[in-house]
Image (cartoon, rainbow, N blue to C red; front, side, top):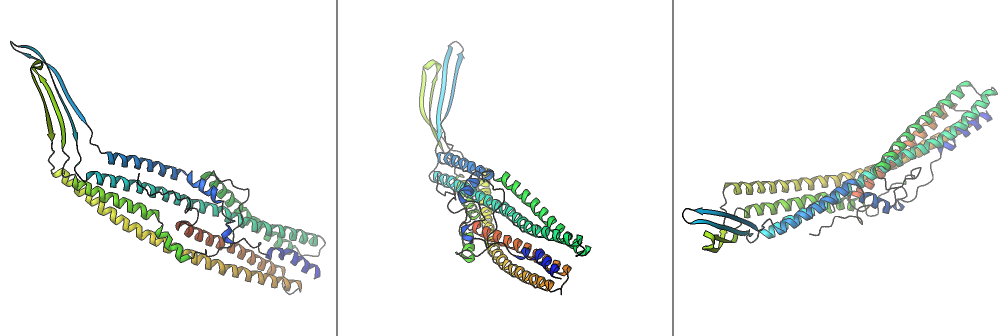
Amino acid sequence: MIRRSVLLAALLLPGLAFAQAAPPLDQRADLPPAPLVSEALDSYPGVLSAAARIDAARAQAGALARGPQEVSIQATALRRDVDREGRFAEFDATVTRPFRLPGKATLDRKTGAAGVKFAQNEMADARHQAALALSQQWFDWVEAGALAASDAANIAYLERALAAVERRAALRDAAALDVDQARAALSRARGQRADALARAAEARARLAATFPSIPLPLDPPAPTAPAEPPIGFDTLAKLVIERSHEIGAAQAMADREGFAAERARAERHADPSFGVRAFSERGGTERGLGVVATMPLGGGYRRLQAEEAAANARAAAQDLAGVQRSVAATAAADRALAETRLAGWKALAQSADAANAVAERTIAGGKLGAIDLADVLFAQRQAGDARREEIAARMAALRAILKLEIDSHVVWIDADDHGDSSAP
């Protein structure tokens, strides 16, 4: 009976201890260094693409400010034959240029500036989305690594225990059933670790391919204990709305379409063209120099264009309202998810502690011979499952809190936000 109690203690006691306490959340020990994150986000293809679109928007704004009113030259040179008078060299040349009516240039500049602002917000939002993708893939790797590490420790204990059972069985001091039970427990733990290792390898490969500028260690960092940030969930949720680049982009587009609608209404009064005409006829015997003017008369086409632009402006205003609602819903969902995930992790952490206590009492009963090995193994299995559930809940809380922090621009986005709203 004494040997059996020693066997039970060797089998179960090491597996009941939790990992060492994680460092405080504000140390960000489970996240990549911020400078590496900034470099990775800046070099992300979607961000670089959005940056190129800013250059395109600035070029378009410059073109709108300058306007399409350019000098036109029309010339004709010919030789004319006149009966009984001879041949004459003649030419005709006209130089004209349209001029924007008052107010149109201002609207063009406003339209271009709004387009640049839209592109800048689109780039900032692309960087934001890249940060969310990085956080998701990073924590996929961290979670799989934490599960694999927990399973590895459990496997080491079960391997020593199985060796002890097999030695006892060889001495006819343990039943074959005890050996089978220990082997089954070990096989199950190995299967769990194999699955966790596969997930970790997949997550690491995806992370390395998506963000190659971040050097990855061989093993992921251990997840820290989640906690509500000092700024508070309420404030973070408000910042999600206040700092949203989705809203900024939608607002810029609504402004741009509004200015474009005003410009289309102004275009119903066409721009006049003024110029100079010079001509020479009958070999220079007739010469002339004068001023020419052209004034297109607006009709149904310009009216319909103005109506189209006005409709686009109304649509952009409704798009803005939709984005504002969507971001508000995201902020509320982020906050609710962070709060509930944190509460869920605390409950499962308590459950894991309770499962440990049950396992410890079961071991004590096994030492006294009052509890069979199968019951002790079952209690240890429940404790192991509770530890895995605690890790999963811990990671879910860390993911939810980090998403709220990224959406509110207090992590990874604040100091590195390149959404400059200045006009070109």
